[in-house]
Each structure stands twice: as structure tokens, then as C-alpha cells.
Image 1: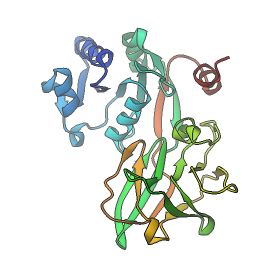
Image 2: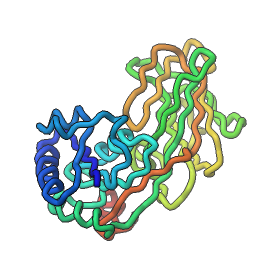
Image 3: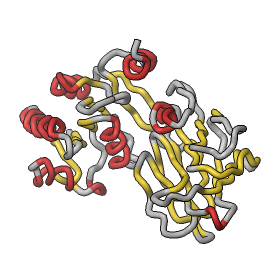
Image 4: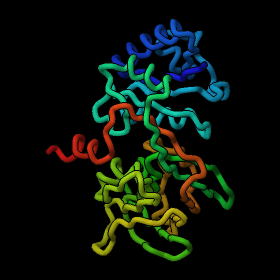
Length: 282
């Protein structure tokens, strides 16, 4: 039975926990594997596999913070495998287990004792130069806006073909309810329960006073374009990772993806208990 371990190689606690789990899982008859670069970074090159050879693990264990869970989601791609996030980072909002008892948590998850939360994803279809240049999936958000340059961009935002905004701005965040507590929250967007199926649309630093965040329905389609060639230096970022932007974007169409993500929870706490603990400070 294969278990995929996804560490944060820059976090010493994560690397140490990964090594402990490799030994534990081997002793219990499981097959622990890591992506090849992670295996090399943690000192287990023989346990490394290419992303194409990961297969369908019985369990995925992300050892770090929320960023490591996002990493695990993108390592898996469309593979439907449950992810247990073990919080060894700072926030751990998406995590399902505390790092202090990570070995017991992993064994409990393998025994089927975890609660499953299904989270929506987004699919972004990018057109560049008159043709489709890529399809990307996000658990948290898709950001379209200025990249490394200092100039603001001009964006036109349409929902189901109807123009909603055209403005100068730093960019626009298209987020899932899961992502509403990430970048979208920092930009002034609403907190949305993951039980809600929909899309959160948040402008970032708009040059105007009439623009407000909008919560869309589950079947709505967002289309973002750069109508002004003089202000068209926009890039696209997926869950915090910028896609190389060598040419001007034509359009980015975003909708709820066909594939969702299974997050495992062992701590017994619901969304609002975690929200209170991590954000409300009361």
C-alpha cells in the first residue's frame, strides 16, 4: 500500500518528520514514496519517483503548513487521493492534524478514522496569441495582475459574458471558498465557508471607489482580459506560483473545476472552530 509523503525541504521539522515516517511506514509494511526532488532533499533518493509514476496512493501526507498542502495538491494533479495535512508550519489552517503527534495521526488516517472534507477547485484556461496556452487548476485562487513590473494593469472582467468591471488595478483574485481565507482575505474579500459552492471575485488595489468583492454561483464563468495594450503587462499566478508570462494575455477563463480535493481531518474541529482559533483571536 503506497503512501506519498510531501515535505517542505526548507523546514527542518518537516524533513525530520519525513524521515521518521519513512521508517515507521516501512516497518508497518507500507510503501512510502516521495517526489524525486523531495526524496533527494530528505536523504532518501531510493524512495523517489517521478510525478508520472506516483500512481494512486492510499494516502498523501503533507508535512508542513498550508503551502505544503497546496504543493501536495499540485503534485497529485487530477489523481483522487486523500490528503492529510500535518501542521509543522505557522498557520496550518487547512491541516487536519497537529505536528506533535504526527505518527499516530498518519496511522489513524490509514485505519480510516479521519473525516473527509471535499473542497472545490478552479480551472483556468489561458489564451495567448490567439490560441489556448494552458489549463491550470487551483485549490485556493487564480490571480491575474501585474507580475514583477511596477506598472498597474488595466483589466476587463466579465461574468457569463456580461461586463462587470473595467479598471486600472494591481489585479483580480478569483478564489474558491477554501481560498477565501488566503490571498483573497488579505485583499479585503469575504470569508466563505467551504460548504458553499461558488467563486469569490476580489479586485486588488482598484483605482476607483465603486468596486466591491463579489460572490458568484457554482456555474458562473469568469473571463478576464487586457483591453488596453498600453496596460497589458499582466501575469497569471496559480496558488501562489506565477506562470511564466512572456507574451500578453488575451483572456483567462475561470470556472469551478471537475476535480475536487479530499482533505482529511483528525482533530475533530469544524471550519468555524478553526476560524476562531486562527483568525479571530477570541
